[in-house]
Image 1 (cartoon, rainbow, N blue to C red):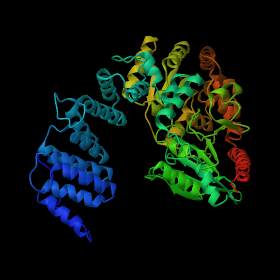
Image 2: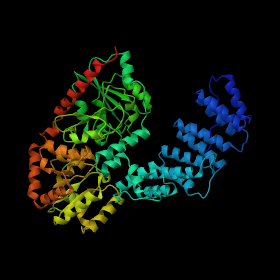
Image 3: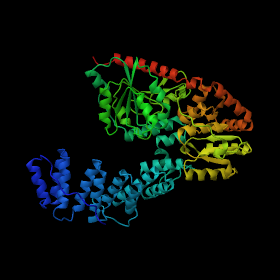
Image 4: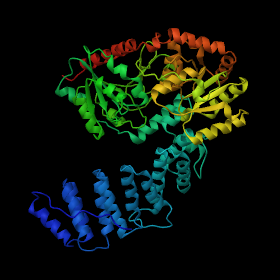
Length: 626
């Protein structure tokens, strides 16, 4: 292997003479490895980062040593921590030119390549480790290093939507070592994404029960509507991942220095204020706040996606506190110092969430909303915004937050969403004279019980078709398999590609009836569907997330499309399919009254939320220290 060229050493401007003397000595081979590592630890503790980088460089480029690869590894690790990934790549390649069997350097090289946007190169490096018969593991268990390579390759393959390869590596990992809760968690969810039923498929020594216990909260929401199981999944995550902070609330420390007064400050906490389901629902929520009484802050670590949607969200904010790259405890202090009265957490425990910020209690009022329609069990989150349909009394014992009820549907939506030109059925390969059922929810929300009910519905309604989202090839193949088992011809399942939001909205008009998933109901999708005037049939259960769509349908004026059992859901779908005039009457109702219903009274919803925020914030101000 040819090493990439390493830059020649340079001096630190205005460095103290003692440092320069040490660098010169390192360059001339005056240190043994042990002395180098001891000095490096001392300089690192003193924060002499740039000097430490030069120390490694001078030593490595100095007199030959049998341990150059070890020093290169430490040097590369420091560069990686500083996010100087291109430089780190060169240093790890230098280490491997000295010792090609050095597994840790190859693993870390893979991480640098991933950061540099070269996933295939990263996968190649990790494959070199997990396919090797043997390798050099400096001070580490070879099995741990092999698992590190397998698990990171599986993770990256999942990110790259290469689900089949990813699942195969997860199985390989679990066969080598069963006791890996994170791998079990991803194994369950990737099977959900592929509609690979039954989802709970034991592997190696991993039992069905272990898979259940280690299922993530998101995957649990798709697997069961049992609120006790959902609560336990949330509590397990919080126990394992969320900081156990026992000190005084940060907002108390901040208000002790400067009392909160004036306009009530609402902070929306999220990394999804962009082209994302949450970002598509919320712009009017931010825009319509009463600026005479409230000041609206974005507490945000969203990536800059360059979209008009993100620009609109940012314009709607009075102030923005960027938190990307800021550690959680510092972020919490910054929020507290900003005097935020009410934090509205828009993520809960969804991907990219930062629950540790909330655990420090940077605001006196902290409420969960939209992103996670379930209990999060996050310490510090005392409230969850809901309505009385999504959170009936029997659900409350399974929720760590108290409900902050609004009079009508809890879900905000955007009445300014852009709609593309209305398409024809022919454009999407839909038969003109058939009854078209549709479901555009993500495939991980599907389960065999509901999908089989859809197949029985197609069987009972001659000529009908089911229009689905073409999410991935493995899910499509598994759905076609279940269809065949139910004697439904493959051509009666029509797969729609992913498209931009305006076109996605427009195509709802082609369906006769949209079928909801259970227990993970549609949220944004249901709002889009009803806004476009197409009826949706749902099944409501025991949990918040299994009652989302029922809340929307009740508020839009179509409660008869809410069912409460699989049998009722299936029967209603068949009844409507056999009587297309009934579906047409729902469409007429939505065309005439849907957009003027309580569901889309967004100014009213914002006022309802403001009443609650103001009540809680003013009470909290009365309790301020001093």
